[in-house]
Length: 108
Length: 121
Image: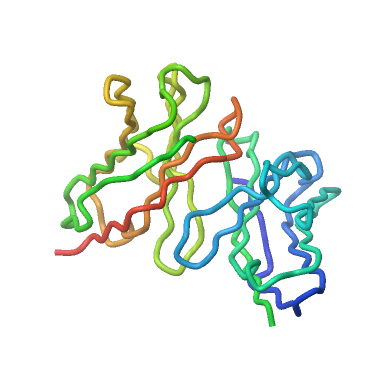
């Protein structure tokens, strides 16, 4: 099955930029979706189809995807951005969705 | 505004069958061309997609639980359900129901708050 690898943790100071990577074989050929999960809450879709944002998601959240790495970028990080972030793609070989391993973002 | 609410037993004994229901409000399951699904998260671990069902009735399962699980829709109650048989401690998790964002199975744009299911004797 298709494997998505994320760094376990990312730390960032308030006001700085956090970059969360999602690695997968030729992931640039797939559409990548990103979810934010605050402690004790359900996941929320923050970026879909690599770089689109659902309504209500701040422009500070952006995404890119190329080669073997997709990236979720959070600009001007705020305390409220502290959460776990998961990437997700469709695995065309198994015809099933796959989640990444998840990254915990800590705001210093 | 679409809302999803999971309901379930909370505690299930090993080898028994877990039954979960997701009640949908703010929109009819049968009137949309979306997918409805279940995702779980063991304590302290990541997300795992379990199963999805299209409003037309087509079903999709994660091979890790296939043959043990069944997803179904009850349009008269505007609910969809998951049954997972022969549960073990490894099935202990928060179970979320969700709806697709668009007409593809993913991404998932609407989630329930989740319900914790513990498998223990």
